[in-house]
Length: 60
Image 1 (cartoon, helix red, strand yellow):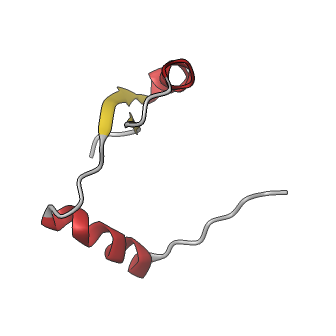
Image 2 (cartoon, one colour; image 1 turned 90 degrees about the vertical axis):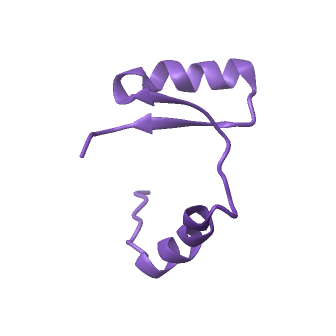
């Protein structure tokens, strides 16, 4: 079964406002380039960390 997500601009605006204002700060462990995504995912499974890994897809 395919999984399709429709853009929800209002929803994104409502969850991004607390981040922009500084009231909510995501806990990021590290940022890795897309080519290292698999290794980062495997490391997360082994390390059981609570912080998130951000996959850097493109500059711009």
